[in-house]
Image 1 (cartoon, rainbow, N blue to C red):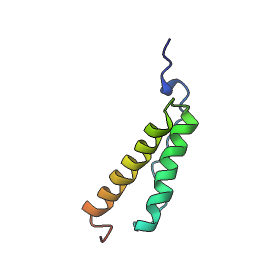
Image 2: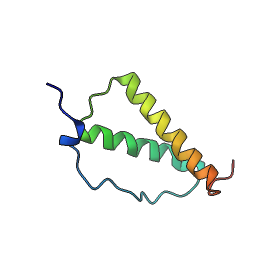
Image 3: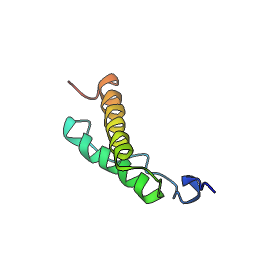
Length: 72
């Protein structure tokens, strides 16, 4: 039987993290995404978890870059 991670998810997920739009904030944002996934108990292998963190930091960096909030 497969159990959905949403069955153990706690809501609401923080939508505002209070991080400044700066490159220095990306590791903390990546950590927070990982912490949420761990808290939910999503069964991910170590490699997949690292990929998740990488994708999260890329998405966050791109959002900051393309909204003009982050200067490369």
